Length: 425
Image (tube, rainbow, N blue to C red; front, side):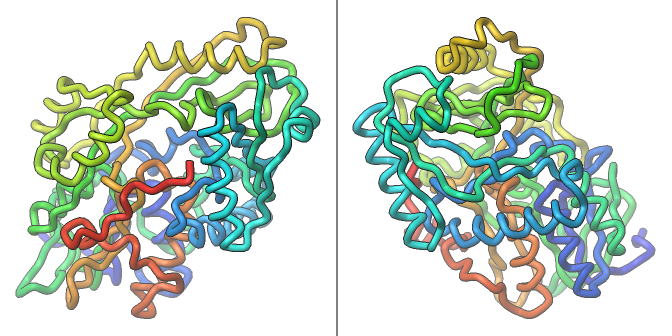
Protein backbone atom coordinates (compact mmCIF):
# COMPACT_ATOMS: atom_id res chain seq x y z
CA UNK A 1 0.00 0.00 0.00
CA UNK A 2 1.13 3.54 -0.71
CA UNK A 3 -0.17 6.60 1.01
CA UNK A 4 -2.04 8.60 -1.67
CA UNK A 5 -0.23 11.94 -1.46
CA UNK A 6 3.55 12.29 -1.54
CA UNK A 7 4.79 15.30 0.41
CA UNK A 8 7.91 17.38 0.68
CA UNK A 9 8.29 16.66 4.40
CA UNK A 10 6.81 13.97 6.67
CA UNK A 11 6.95 14.76 10.38
CA UNK A 12 6.55 12.09 13.03
CA UNK A 13 4.83 13.47 16.13
CA UNK A 14 2.09 16.08 16.46
CA UNK A 15 3.25 17.55 19.73
CA UNK A 16 4.19 21.20 20.03
CA UNK A 17 7.61 20.57 18.42
CA UNK A 18 6.28 18.67 15.40
CA UNK A 19 3.43 21.11 14.82
CA UNK A 20 5.76 24.11 15.12
CA UNK A 21 8.12 22.67 12.49
CA UNK A 22 5.16 21.83 10.23
CA UNK A 23 3.74 25.34 10.56
CA UNK A 24 6.98 27.04 9.53
CA UNK A 25 7.51 24.64 6.64
CA UNK A 26 3.98 25.20 5.34
CA UNK A 27 4.44 28.95 5.55
CA UNK A 28 7.46 28.49 3.29
CA UNK A 29 5.25 26.77 0.73
CA UNK A 30 6.23 23.15 1.35
CA UNK A 31 3.76 20.26 1.38
CA UNK A 32 3.80 18.73 4.86
CA UNK A 33 2.14 15.76 6.54
CA UNK A 34 2.31 15.15 10.29
CA UNK A 35 1.71 11.65 11.67
CA UNK A 36 0.52 11.20 15.24
CA UNK A 37 -0.08 7.84 16.90
CA UNK A 38 -2.55 9.33 19.37
CA UNK A 39 -6.11 10.41 18.81
CA UNK A 40 -5.29 14.13 18.78
CA UNK A 41 -2.40 16.54 18.50
CA UNK A 42 -0.47 17.31 21.65
CA UNK A 43 -2.08 14.68 23.82
CA UNK A 44 1.19 13.40 25.27
CA UNK A 45 3.86 15.54 26.99
CA UNK A 46 3.10 18.80 25.14
CA UNK A 47 -0.18 19.25 27.01
CA UNK A 48 1.29 18.14 30.35
CA UNK A 49 4.15 20.61 30.68
CA UNK A 50 4.37 23.14 33.51
CA UNK A 51 3.96 25.94 30.99
CA UNK A 52 7.10 27.91 31.91
CA UNK A 53 8.51 30.01 29.04
CA UNK A 54 11.84 31.11 30.43
CA UNK A 55 15.14 32.40 29.15
CA UNK A 56 16.97 32.56 32.48
CA UNK A 57 18.56 29.52 34.05
CA UNK A 58 19.21 27.84 30.70
CA UNK A 59 22.27 26.08 29.43
CA UNK A 60 24.14 28.74 27.40
CA UNK A 61 23.58 26.75 24.19
CA UNK A 62 19.82 27.08 24.65
CA UNK A 63 19.68 30.81 25.40
CA UNK A 64 19.57 32.01 21.74
CA UNK A 65 16.74 29.57 21.06
CA UNK A 66 14.91 30.68 24.21
CA UNK A 67 15.26 34.36 23.29
CA UNK A 68 13.94 33.78 19.77
CA UNK A 69 11.11 31.61 21.11
CA UNK A 70 10.11 34.33 23.56
CA UNK A 71 9.69 36.82 20.71
CA UNK A 72 7.68 34.28 18.70
CA UNK A 73 5.42 33.52 21.67
CA UNK A 74 4.67 37.25 21.90
CA UNK A 75 3.98 37.46 18.17
CA UNK A 76 1.61 34.48 18.17
CA UNK A 77 -0.27 35.80 21.21
CA UNK A 78 -0.65 39.24 19.65
CA UNK A 79 -2.05 37.67 16.49
CA UNK A 80 -4.39 35.07 18.03
CA UNK A 81 -5.22 36.55 21.42
CA UNK A 82 -4.38 35.68 25.01
CA UNK A 83 -6.90 32.84 25.21
CA UNK A 84 -5.16 31.06 22.32
CA UNK A 85 -1.86 30.65 24.17
CA UNK A 86 -2.26 31.88 27.74
CA UNK A 87 1.18 33.48 27.31
CA UNK A 88 1.86 36.16 29.91
CA UNK A 89 5.18 37.87 30.60
CA UNK A 90 4.72 38.44 34.31
CA UNK A 91 8.14 37.05 35.21
CA UNK A 92 9.58 33.94 36.81
CA UNK A 93 11.32 34.40 40.15
CA UNK A 94 14.23 32.16 41.04
CA UNK A 95 14.99 32.85 44.71
CA UNK A 96 18.08 31.76 46.64
CA UNK A 97 17.89 30.42 50.18
CA UNK A 98 21.47 29.24 50.75
CA UNK A 99 24.91 30.34 49.65
CA UNK A 100 24.93 27.49 47.13
CA UNK A 101 21.57 28.66 45.74
CA UNK A 102 22.94 32.19 45.52
CA UNK A 103 25.93 30.97 43.49
CA UNK A 104 23.51 29.23 41.12
CA UNK A 105 21.47 32.32 40.41
CA UNK A 106 24.58 34.47 40.04
CA UNK A 107 25.94 32.03 37.43
CA UNK A 108 22.57 32.10 35.66
CA UNK A 109 22.65 35.90 35.73
CA UNK A 110 26.09 35.96 34.10
CA UNK A 111 24.99 33.56 31.37
CA UNK A 112 21.83 35.53 30.62
CA UNK A 113 23.58 38.90 30.68
CA UNK A 114 26.23 37.53 28.32
CA UNK A 115 23.50 37.04 25.70
CA UNK A 116 22.00 40.48 26.23
CA UNK A 117 18.97 39.41 28.26
CA UNK A 118 17.50 41.95 30.65
CA UNK A 119 18.12 39.99 33.80
CA UNK A 120 18.75 41.22 37.32
CA UNK A 121 19.43 40.03 40.83
CA UNK A 122 16.90 41.23 43.39
CA UNK A 123 18.01 42.06 46.91
CA UNK A 124 16.00 40.62 49.83
CA UNK A 125 14.07 43.90 50.30
CA UNK A 126 13.32 44.06 46.57
CA UNK A 127 12.06 40.48 46.63
CA UNK A 128 9.88 41.27 49.65
CA UNK A 129 8.45 44.31 47.92
CA UNK A 130 7.66 42.33 44.78
CA UNK A 131 6.05 39.37 46.56
CA UNK A 132 5.24 40.35 50.16
CA UNK A 133 3.25 37.16 50.85
CA UNK A 134 6.36 34.99 50.35
CA UNK A 135 7.48 33.45 53.66
CA UNK A 136 11.02 32.42 54.52
CA UNK A 137 14.47 33.96 54.66
CA UNK A 138 15.95 34.66 51.24
CA UNK A 139 19.35 35.88 50.08
CA UNK A 140 17.94 37.32 46.85
CA UNK A 141 16.35 36.22 43.59
CA UNK A 142 16.88 36.20 39.83
CA UNK A 143 14.33 37.86 37.56
CA UNK A 144 14.45 38.29 33.77
CA UNK A 145 12.18 40.79 32.06
CA UNK A 146 9.92 39.10 29.55
CA UNK A 147 10.00 35.61 31.02
CA UNK A 148 6.62 34.11 31.71
CA UNK A 149 4.37 31.16 31.12
CA UNK A 150 1.62 29.83 28.85
CA UNK A 151 -1.17 27.26 28.92
CA UNK A 152 0.25 24.08 27.36
CA UNK A 153 -2.96 22.45 26.10
CA UNK A 154 -4.35 25.68 24.62
CA UNK A 155 -1.06 26.75 23.05
CA UNK A 156 -0.34 23.35 21.49
CA UNK A 157 -3.87 23.21 20.05
CA UNK A 158 -3.43 26.71 18.62
CA UNK A 159 -0.17 25.82 16.87
CA UNK A 160 -1.75 22.64 15.46
CA UNK A 161 -4.69 24.72 14.23
CA UNK A 162 -2.38 27.30 12.63
CA UNK A 163 -0.52 24.49 10.89
CA UNK A 164 -3.77 23.08 9.49
CA UNK A 165 -4.82 26.55 8.31
CA UNK A 166 -1.47 26.83 6.52
CA UNK A 167 -2.14 23.59 4.64
CA UNK A 168 -0.48 20.94 6.81
CA UNK A 169 -2.18 17.55 6.66
CA UNK A 170 -2.47 16.13 10.18
CA UNK A 171 -2.98 12.36 10.46
CA UNK A 172 -4.04 11.45 14.00
CA UNK A 173 -4.42 7.86 15.12
CA UNK A 174 -1.88 7.14 12.40
CA UNK A 175 1.31 5.62 13.84
CA UNK A 176 4.58 5.55 11.94
CA UNK A 177 6.18 2.11 11.97
CA UNK A 178 9.51 3.10 10.46
CA UNK A 179 11.51 5.42 8.25
CA UNK A 180 11.76 4.11 4.68
CA UNK A 181 15.24 4.19 3.13
CA UNK A 182 16.19 3.04 -0.35
CA UNK A 183 19.82 2.98 -1.36
CA UNK A 184 20.67 5.15 1.64
CA UNK A 185 18.18 7.82 0.56
CA UNK A 186 15.12 8.76 2.60
CA UNK A 187 12.03 7.57 0.78
CA UNK A 188 9.38 8.49 3.34
CA UNK A 189 7.68 6.90 6.33
CA UNK A 190 6.04 3.51 6.68
CA UNK A 191 2.65 3.67 8.36
CA UNK A 192 -0.01 1.10 9.11
CA UNK A 193 -1.77 2.43 6.00
CA UNK A 194 1.29 2.09 3.79
CA UNK A 195 4.20 4.19 2.58
CA UNK A 196 3.97 7.97 2.54
CA UNK A 197 6.67 9.19 0.18
CA UNK A 198 8.51 12.27 1.37
CA UNK A 199 11.57 14.21 0.37
CA UNK A 200 12.57 14.64 4.00
CA UNK A 201 11.56 13.10 7.34
CA UNK A 202 11.65 14.69 10.80
CA UNK A 203 11.59 12.62 13.98
CA UNK A 204 9.85 14.92 16.46
CA UNK A 205 8.00 12.30 18.45
CA UNK A 206 9.56 12.75 21.88
CA UNK A 207 9.94 9.53 23.83
CA UNK A 208 9.23 7.53 20.66
CA UNK A 209 12.04 9.01 18.57
CA UNK A 210 14.81 6.77 19.90
CA UNK A 211 12.86 3.62 19.00
CA UNK A 212 12.26 4.72 15.41
CA UNK A 213 15.86 5.80 15.06
CA UNK A 214 17.15 2.49 16.34
CA UNK A 215 15.33 0.62 13.56
CA UNK A 216 17.48 2.37 10.96
CA UNK A 217 20.74 2.20 12.93
CA UNK A 218 20.53 5.56 14.68
CA UNK A 219 21.58 5.29 18.34
CA UNK A 220 20.02 8.06 20.43
CA UNK A 221 20.85 8.13 24.16
CA UNK A 222 17.47 9.13 25.55
CA UNK A 223 16.11 8.11 28.94
CA UNK A 224 12.38 8.28 29.68
CA UNK A 225 11.62 10.04 32.96
CA UNK A 226 8.31 10.94 34.56
CA UNK A 227 7.42 14.35 35.91
CA UNK A 228 4.53 14.64 38.37
CA UNK A 229 2.52 17.87 38.52
CA UNK A 230 -0.31 19.14 40.71
CA UNK A 231 -3.11 21.63 40.23
CA UNK A 232 -4.54 23.41 43.25
CA UNK A 233 -8.00 24.68 44.05
CA UNK A 234 -8.81 28.33 43.37
CA UNK A 235 -7.58 30.98 45.79
CA UNK A 236 -8.05 34.71 46.00
CA UNK A 237 -5.52 36.00 43.41
CA UNK A 238 -2.49 37.71 44.95
CA UNK A 239 0.34 37.36 42.40
CA UNK A 240 0.89 36.92 38.67
CA UNK A 241 4.52 35.95 39.18
CA UNK A 242 5.67 32.38 38.67
CA UNK A 243 8.47 30.94 40.76
CA UNK A 244 11.10 28.24 40.45
CA UNK A 245 12.26 27.83 44.02
CA UNK A 246 14.71 25.49 45.72
CA UNK A 247 11.99 23.07 46.88
CA UNK A 248 8.97 23.80 44.70
CA UNK A 249 7.91 25.62 41.54
CA UNK A 250 4.57 27.17 40.73
CA UNK A 251 2.77 29.29 38.18
CA UNK A 252 -0.56 31.05 38.70
CA UNK A 253 -3.56 30.47 36.48
CA UNK A 254 -6.17 33.14 35.64
CA UNK A 255 -8.81 31.56 37.91
CA UNK A 256 -6.62 31.85 41.03
CA UNK A 257 -5.41 28.23 41.02
CA UNK A 258 -1.75 27.19 40.73
CA UNK A 259 0.23 24.59 38.81
CA UNK A 260 2.78 23.02 41.16
CA UNK A 261 6.05 21.32 40.18
CA UNK A 262 9.38 20.43 41.74
CA UNK A 263 12.09 22.85 42.83
CA UNK A 264 15.49 23.27 41.22
CA UNK A 265 17.48 21.84 44.10
CA UNK A 266 16.15 18.30 44.32
CA UNK A 267 15.24 15.49 42.00
CA UNK A 268 12.22 16.42 39.97
CA UNK A 269 11.63 13.34 37.88
CA UNK A 270 11.30 9.62 38.38
CA UNK A 271 13.92 7.69 36.43
CA UNK A 272 12.22 4.61 35.07
CA UNK A 273 14.78 2.03 33.99
CA UNK A 274 13.82 1.12 30.41
CA UNK A 275 15.43 -0.91 27.62
CA UNK A 276 16.91 2.24 26.07
CA UNK A 277 18.38 3.20 29.45
CA UNK A 278 20.37 -0.05 29.51
CA UNK A 279 21.53 0.44 25.92
CA UNK A 280 22.99 3.85 26.71
CA UNK A 281 23.94 3.38 30.34
CA UNK A 282 27.53 4.54 29.75
CA UNK A 283 26.28 7.97 28.66
CA UNK A 284 24.08 8.41 31.74
CA UNK A 285 26.47 7.01 34.36
CA UNK A 286 28.20 10.36 35.08
CA UNK A 287 24.86 12.00 35.85
CA UNK A 288 23.78 9.02 37.96
CA UNK A 289 27.00 9.25 39.98
CA UNK A 290 26.57 12.99 40.60
CA UNK A 291 22.93 12.73 41.66
CA UNK A 292 22.59 9.26 43.17
CA UNK A 293 21.22 10.59 46.48
CA UNK A 294 18.36 12.33 44.69
CA UNK A 295 17.41 9.70 42.13
CA UNK A 296 14.42 7.42 42.44
CA UNK A 297 15.21 4.57 40.06
CA UNK A 298 12.40 2.15 39.31
CA UNK A 299 11.95 -0.88 37.12
CA UNK A 300 8.34 -1.90 36.75
CA UNK A 301 5.35 -0.81 34.74
CA UNK A 302 7.26 1.58 32.49
CA UNK A 303 9.95 -1.02 31.74
CA UNK A 304 7.39 -3.66 30.83
CA UNK A 305 5.41 -1.16 28.77
CA UNK A 306 8.42 -0.26 26.67
CA UNK A 307 9.38 -3.90 26.26
CA UNK A 308 5.96 -4.53 24.77
CA UNK A 309 5.78 -1.27 22.80
CA UNK A 310 5.63 -1.49 19.04
CA UNK A 311 5.24 2.22 18.32
CA UNK A 312 1.80 1.55 16.90
CA UNK A 313 -0.17 2.91 19.84
CA UNK A 314 0.04 5.76 22.30
CA UNK A 315 1.40 4.67 25.70
CA UNK A 316 -0.93 4.35 28.64
CA UNK A 317 -1.39 7.02 31.27
CA UNK A 318 1.87 7.44 33.24
CA UNK A 319 1.52 6.94 37.00
CA UNK A 320 1.94 9.92 39.31
CA UNK A 321 4.31 9.95 42.28
CA UNK A 322 2.03 10.51 45.28
CA UNK A 323 4.88 11.12 47.72
CA UNK A 324 6.29 13.83 45.46
CA UNK A 325 2.89 15.47 45.16
CA UNK A 326 2.61 15.62 48.94
CA UNK A 327 6.11 17.10 49.36
CA UNK A 328 5.61 19.73 46.69
CA UNK A 329 2.22 20.78 48.06
CA UNK A 330 3.65 21.03 51.58
CA UNK A 331 6.53 23.17 50.31
CA UNK A 332 4.11 25.44 48.42
CA UNK A 333 1.87 25.94 51.47
CA UNK A 334 4.94 26.78 53.57
CA UNK A 335 5.81 29.58 51.13
CA UNK A 336 2.36 31.14 51.43
CA UNK A 337 0.91 30.54 54.92
CA UNK A 338 -1.96 32.93 54.19
CA UNK A 339 -3.42 30.32 51.85
CA UNK A 340 -3.87 27.85 54.70
CA UNK A 341 -4.38 24.25 53.62
CA UNK A 342 -5.13 25.10 49.99
CA UNK A 343 -6.21 21.74 48.59
CA UNK A 344 -4.86 19.94 45.55
CA UNK A 345 -7.67 19.35 43.05
CA UNK A 346 -5.93 17.35 40.35
CA UNK A 347 -2.62 15.75 39.44
CA UNK A 348 -1.01 14.30 36.36
CA UNK A 349 2.28 12.94 35.10
CA UNK A 350 4.09 13.15 31.80
CA UNK A 351 6.90 11.28 30.09
CA UNK A 352 9.95 13.37 29.28
CA UNK A 353 12.69 12.40 26.82
CA UNK A 354 15.90 13.14 28.73
CA UNK A 355 19.41 13.24 27.27
CA UNK A 356 22.58 12.70 29.34
CA UNK A 357 23.50 16.41 29.22
CA UNK A 358 19.91 17.67 29.58
CA UNK A 359 19.83 19.59 26.29
CA UNK A 360 18.09 18.40 23.12
CA UNK A 361 19.19 16.59 19.99
CA UNK A 362 18.55 18.82 16.96
CA UNK A 363 20.41 17.39 14.05
CA UNK A 364 20.66 16.02 10.53
CA UNK A 365 22.69 13.06 11.72
CA UNK A 366 23.67 11.56 8.36
CA UNK A 367 25.15 13.67 5.58
CA UNK A 368 23.34 13.10 2.32
CA UNK A 369 20.20 11.75 3.97
CA UNK A 370 17.27 14.09 4.51
CA UNK A 371 16.51 12.77 7.97
CA UNK A 372 16.25 15.30 10.80
CA UNK A 373 15.88 14.75 14.54
CA UNK A 374 14.29 17.16 17.01
CA UNK A 375 13.96 15.17 20.22
CA UNK A 376 15.44 14.67 23.67
CA UNK A 377 14.17 18.04 24.84
CA UNK A 378 14.55 17.12 28.52
CA UNK A 379 11.44 19.06 29.53
CA UNK A 380 12.40 22.22 27.59
CA UNK A 381 10.47 21.57 24.37
CA UNK A 382 7.33 23.50 25.24
CA UNK A 383 9.10 26.82 25.80
CA UNK A 384 11.53 26.43 22.88
CA UNK A 385 9.04 25.07 20.32
CA UNK A 386 8.40 28.21 18.21
CA UNK A 387 12.14 28.69 17.72
CA UNK A 388 12.72 25.00 17.00
CA UNK A 389 10.03 25.25 14.34
CA UNK A 390 11.77 28.17 12.67
CA UNK A 391 15.26 26.67 12.87
CA UNK A 392 14.45 23.16 11.63
CA UNK A 393 12.20 24.51 8.87
CA UNK A 394 15.00 26.82 7.74
CA UNK A 395 17.45 23.94 7.79
CA UNK A 396 15.20 21.83 5.55
CA UNK A 397 14.14 24.62 3.18
CA UNK A 398 17.36 26.66 2.97
CA UNK A 399 19.97 24.03 3.72
CA UNK A 400 21.03 25.56 7.04
CA UNK A 401 19.44 26.84 10.26
CA UNK A 402 19.56 30.50 11.19
CA UNK A 403 21.21 29.84 14.57
CA UNK A 404 24.23 27.74 15.48
CA UNK A 405 22.87 24.34 16.49
CA UNK A 406 26.20 22.52 16.68
CA UNK A 407 25.89 22.02 20.46
CA UNK A 408 22.84 19.83 19.82
CA UNK A 409 24.50 17.36 17.41
CA UNK A 410 23.76 13.72 18.13
CA UNK A 411 27.41 12.82 17.55
CA UNK A 412 28.45 14.81 20.62
CA UNK A 413 27.82 11.73 22.77
CA UNK A 414 30.07 9.38 20.80
CA UNK A 415 32.72 12.08 20.23
CA UNK A 416 32.97 12.95 23.92
CA UNK A 417 31.68 16.46 23.36
CA UNK A 418 28.50 16.24 25.43
CA UNK A 419 27.71 19.37 27.38
CA UNK A 420 28.23 17.69 30.74
CA UNK A 421 24.73 18.52 32.03
CA UNK A 422 25.95 22.05 32.74
CA UNK A 423 23.00 24.09 33.88
CA UNK A 424 23.13 27.40 35.67
CA UNK A 425 20.14 26.16 37.67
